[in-house]
Length: 135
Image (cartoon, rainbow, N blue to C red):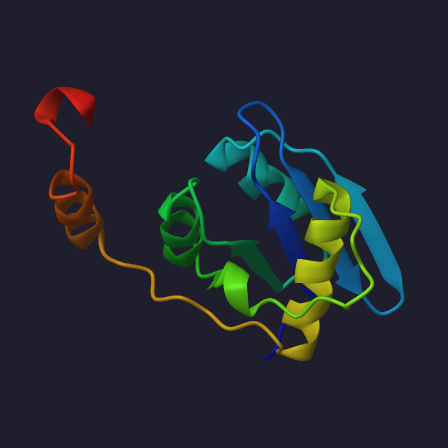
C-alpha cells in the first residue's frame, strides 16, 4: 500500500453520500453527490495517492470501475464481513464512512470481486422477475 489518504464512502442516498478520509493525523468529512465526477473532484483535492472503500450494495460497481480506470485503488467491501464493535449500535452514514476509511487504512476489509460490465449486465438480466422493460 503506497496510499497516503484512505477514504470511506457511504453511498446510500440518491442525492448525497457521506465521505470520510483518514490519514495520520488528519481527518476530513464531506458530502459529495453520488455523481461519479463529483466524487472524483473531491478525491482529487485530497493528498494522494488515495485509496477508496465502500460497501457492496444497491449502488453497484460503477464507482469501482470508474476509479480503477483512473488508477485509484477502490475496495468494494462485503457488508457481512465488516468488523463492528459489539456495543456499537448507533449506525449513521458519517460513522459508516469513518469506519470504512479506518478499516481500509489497517487492511481489515474483505473485498468482493468487481464483475465486468458484461457480467453484471448478464446477472441483472437473468435475475428472477427482470424483464427488458424493468432494466
